[in-house]
Length: 139
Image (cartoon, rainbow, N blue to C red; front, side, top):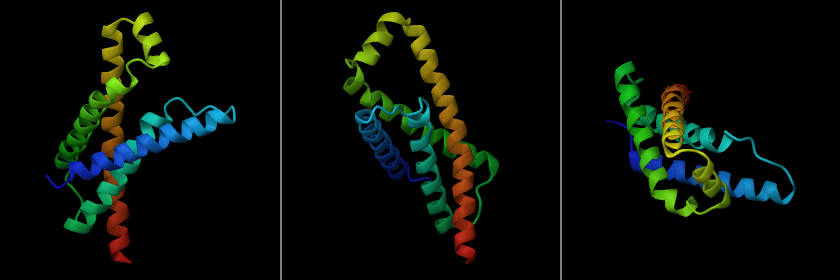
């Protein structure tokens, strides 16, 4: 596998923390952040950065199946890091309300649905990052 999962995880965590801080900052001014932005933006950035690194290392695009395997591994990193972060959010008012009103089976389904969306984002933006990296190498 050509993906550095530690680097991807660090970029994803950095993006998640940045989105958390941006949401808190915007809340001070009474501005809300779009609901899905914190879910979508960190894997986008991490996938593009990792794709550019792959392009620098291999100087060739990934084949379709191998790109899907890399995207699935990156999605696994997101799942593990999310589960590790869960105790930090478990008692927050929003999560407590969700736990009390939404059955656990539905919460697990939502988690799996979001992981499927992140898998698609990882695959799309990994390819995009590789193309950007190859274009940069041509210049």
